[in-house]
Length: 48
Image (cartoon, rainbow, N blue to C red; front, side):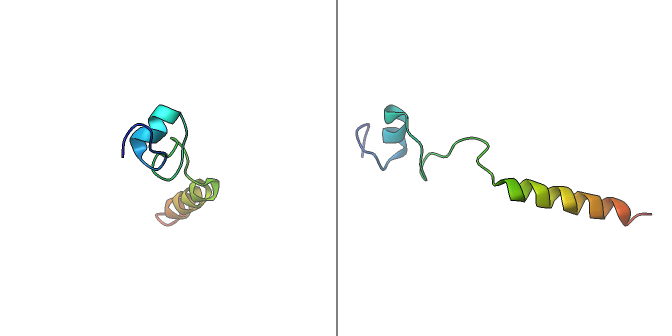
């Protein structure tokens, strides 16, 4: 498990690739953001 290992995080950094061990920033699904927006709108309507 080192710099040449494709499965380890260090190997991914050295190789310049991504995967399950090394996720890209902002890799959250788009639908999760949409659901959060819907929940916020519903919460805003309740106090009225």
